[in-house]
Length: 120
Image (cartoon, rainbow, N blue to C red):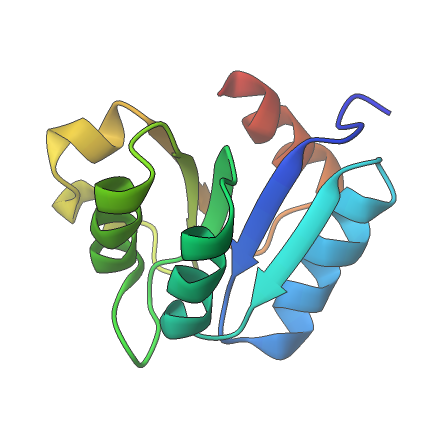
């Protein structure tokens, strides 16, 4: 239970994959909340601090990099795991985001996700 009580926000518009992440992290003891849209994530961030946000890069409303920039304005200590089925998406991120994030290519196992969380 290495993730016991770690508060994590998951943002992914792919319902199936988002639920997979929520189940995987909750079963490892994390306190997980999730959103299917960036606007939902912004509302949750305004209500409370999540030390870690796991965020899909490719979403309809805004991309994950843009969402991260908005989150940092409100919660500057937030760290990120960016996820995507497209391997080179993180290369577009500004350096200050790269310094506080890791990238994970979909699909991945719960063990790989936990390892990335522990890197941060």
